Amino acid sequence: MTVLGNGLHDVLRHEDALSVEEANLAMIRRLGDAEENILATQSNLATSYSMTGRDEAALRLRQEVYSGYLRLLGEEDIDSVEEAGNYAATLKNLDRFKEAKSLLRKSIPVARRIIGYGHIFTLRMRWIYGEALYMDPDATLDDLREAVTMLEETERVARRVLGGAHPLTGGIVRHLRKARAALGARETPSTPPLGSV
Image 1 (cartoon, rainbow, N blue to C red):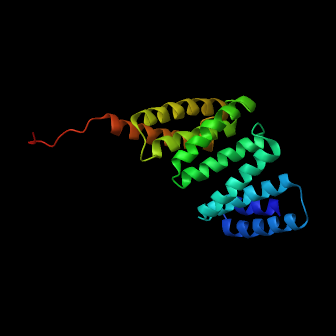
Image 2 (cartoon, one colour):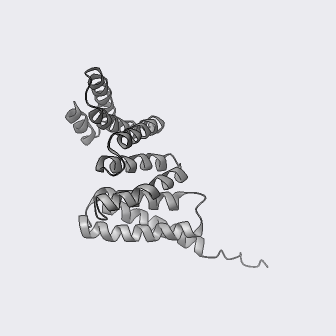
Image 3 (spheres, rainbow, N blue to C red):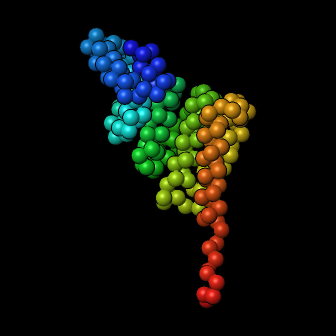
């Protein structure tokens, strides 16, 4: 059922994937599957919730999955690191920037230590952090500068490790442009209209 759900996502049939994943979760719970398998299935279901616009449901499930992995495997496990990134991305998507930034400030150093600076999960977390910095309506000038610096460094590593054609690299490049534009708009003093004093 997991393969079917993933296949439906791959062909953009997210509502169908959601139905399959809900049934799969109910089945593995009923059969008493291992907690780690239940968490992985819940993570897939949270992705389906996000893909179908059910972000609040996705957030509740992401928090549950992340807490479950921390309890079961500890913070220094690759599954916990991946779920920290997923949880932070959902927080960011719901404009809960402060919470996303707080989680990522704790999780990025762990990711760098256990899986490395150039691992796709670490790069993704740094990308999400850069987005949360510049997208926050309360962003300071220092936040915008940090976002640009973070995205520039992440883009360089992603290009070296994954190549310029990789979707993650392309996403970082797009958001780097937006962060630079936000910084430029804030740094450029507005000029008074002609004839005003």
